[in-house]
Image (cartoon, rainbow, N blue to C red; front, side):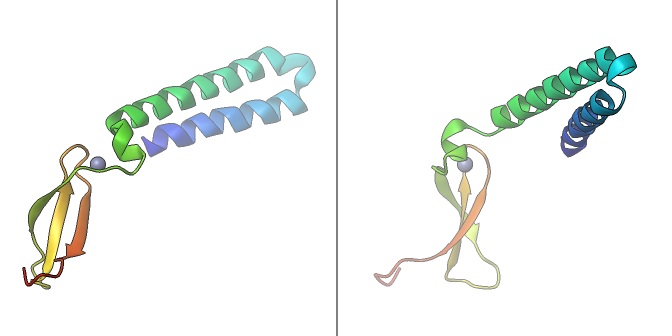
Amino acid sequence: MEKLKAAAWFLITAGVIMFIMYFDTMWPYAAGMILMGAALHIAVSLKTKKSLPLLCRAGYHRYEIAGYDEEVRSMRIYECTRCGKKHKAFLGGGGA
Ligand SMILES: [Zn+2]
């Protein structure tokens, strides 16, 4: 995914440079490259967004206890049931 994003930015950057430097002869190609880069960038962003649920992107994860930390026994590991993000937290008070 990161490679595609880099390719998209490369197309846009190269297109802009070409547009400025060789406007007279190359502007249709330059415009095409910028448009292609923009379209690719949008496609990548949409796909990345889809892979992460809306609530998770907003920071509202649905954590469930996935286990205990191996080194620190009083540390619990929580895992989000939607996106799989892990989160560690110490057990609360109350002698649990
Ligand atoms: Zn999540």
